Image (tube, rainbow, N blue to C red; front, side, top):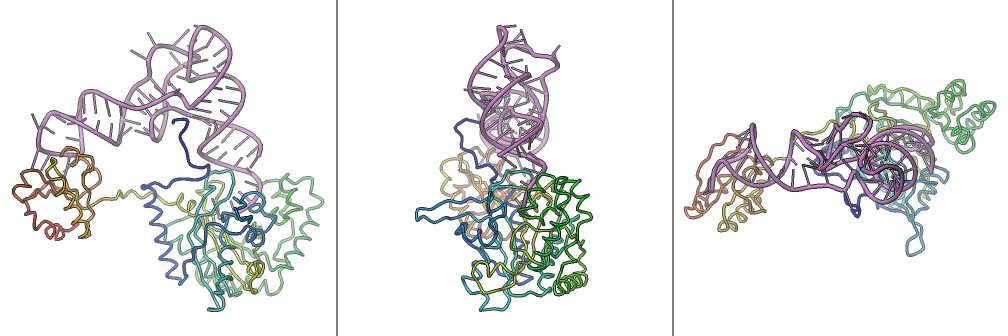
Length: 419
RNA sequence: GUGGGUGUAGCUCAACUGGUUAGAGCACCUGUUUGUGGCACAGGAGGCUGUGGGUUCAAGUCCCAUCACUCACCCCA
C-alpha cells in the first residue's frame, strides 16, 4: 500500500461487481414486493435543509446532536446529508400535497443515508435503507399492512430466525404521564443505574428501558409498564392490530421495553431482529408517527413506516455463486481480422447476444483461456484462413465441438442456437 | 467520543525463544501445443513486513507513537 494512495472514507464501502449482483437481486425482490402491495417509489435529494431534521427527528436525539454531516453552503444556509428518510419523505409528501390527491399515500424507497458514527459490524457512515411510509390512516389496518410487508419480504428472501417485536408507546399525553411515573420509580435507584442510564434519566428516560446493562435490567423488571398508561383508544388500537396480525398468521412478541429512539414515534413500534448480526441485530425498525407531518409544517396527518438496513439484510443472505457468463467470445488471430472481429461482436450484441472479444491483442490460446474463464458458451474463431474463405469456426465451449459456418450467415446461425 | 483486538504479495495465511536473500496456496501472466480453452506440468511477475521513531552487533519479530482495519460501548438500520 503506497503511502500517497487515496482510500475511501472511513465507514464507506465500494460495492464491487461480485457483490453488486447480490444487491441487484435484493433490490429486485424489494421492487417486486412493493408492486404487490401497490406502493409507489419515491426518490428524494441526497441533502436537505438542516432544519428539517432538527424539527422532524428531534433536537436532542443522537442523530441530530452528533451524527449529522452538516455544512454551511455558499448561500449561508445550513444543509445536511440525510441521516434518515422519514423526515425527507414526509417533507415531500407535504410539499407536493400528495394527501390532497389521495386519502392514503403509500410510498417506498431504497436510498443511501449518512451518519457520522464509529463503524462496526452492520454499521457504516454511508449505508442504505429500504423503507416504507404510509400517510393518511390512523387505523390499525395500515399498521398491520406495513408490518406484513416487512415480514413478507424477509420470508421471500428466505431469511429464517427473524423475530418480530411489537409494542405501543401510546399517544403523546399518556406517554408524558408514563415518563413521569417511570422517573418517579427510578429515582431511588438512580445511583445504582449505569452511567449511560443516569444520563438518559434526564434526556430520554424511556430509553433506559432499552438498556443492555444487566443490573439495570434487574431494576427495570419492577418498573411500571407503559400499557397501564395507554388511553382507551391506544388500547383498542393495539388490540386490533394484534388481532389483524393473528389473522395474517404473523407471529410477534410483545416487548413493553421496545422504545424507539427518534422523537416522532407514537403508538405502534416494532423491530425485526436477526440473531446472526452481532450486536447490531435490528434488521428493520419502524413505527407510527402521527405528529411528524404537522411538526414539519403540514396538516395533521397520521403516518406509519419502517426502515430496513440493506447492508444488514445483505449480511444475512447467502452469497450468490453464479458467476456472470456471456454467450459468445469472438477470437481473432492476427492484425488482418481485427476490424472483422469488432464488427462481428457489434452485430452479435445488436442481436441481443452478450459478446466479448480481445482488447489486448493476445494469442489465440490466451483468448480461449479468457473465454473459458468468463464462462462464454461459444467461441467464434477468425484467422487469416477464415478471413480468406469467408468461413468462421464456431466452437461450443461446453463440449468442444467445432463447426465451420459461412461468415455471411453467422448471425442467423448464432441466434438460432440455444443459450 | 471511549475501550479491546489486528496490521506480512491482489486474497487467505506461514516465518522456532530477535539471526543470512521474508515463504506457501489461490488468483494473475507466459510456456509445454509457433491456429484452439478447461486438466496437468514448468517457469514468471508481484513485498520499503501499514507508517515514523527507539532498543540491539542484528527487528517482520521487542518498546513507543501514529494511521488503518475490526469488534464492542453510546446510539441505531
